[in-house]
Length: 312
Image (cartoon, rainbow, N blue to C red; front, side, top):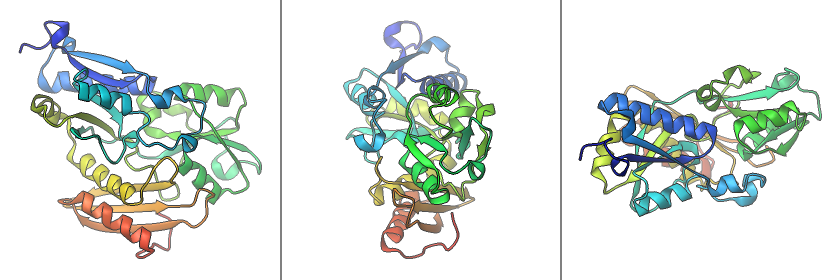
């Protein structure tokens, strides 16, 4: 097959229709074209509105289904309408549909959360009763743990939508991922970059992954050029931790794995939705079995053993 000559032969890249998701899909297409020496017209980006996007006014904990932003894309992969799908790895369910796999991970962006406030106040400077909006139950729980005197409310929408709501005074502050701001060229919007020891990120935060059909060796080989081994090992470790704790949109869980040579260090946190009873764990193990290490950390957290005395 001579790629890029006809629309029929183009590689179809599925993505959510949000500005951030489109930027991520364009990054993947650009990297593939550069690494494989392919013309840009080899690729067609196919934006889809997902169930999570259609339910944009409902708090995610009420919906409670992991994979809300990927289901439609996965259906199109399995039907053959798409060749690959590009996701924010933190949105991908820990159990994939039969026949699909995460075939590549791009080098990870900044993993940290940021606070954006109208007043320019940092988190610990916000006055009591200030309203903080977030769609993440993890972020809500962490705010409740550190600042129980603040009022945390559900707050959804694309990045630009949330920033406009903030500007209009709907809330006093919000929390977003630094990675998303960086990819949109909006890093200057951040008032404060939060320390991941105090605010452990969502498992797989900051990572872009590619999902494709297991049996499609052509696509698996194509995207292998993009795979960053350190990111892949770290994210697989974090996802196994999440899966072991039965994590969902209703479960506040943070995790960050970092590769050091042949080893991985994973620090994880599970916390009640009201910010109480933080359970922290840290484990170190071989990169040859990242998922096993994440599962081990999850079992330790469930059993209440190996807990850290200091915040992760």
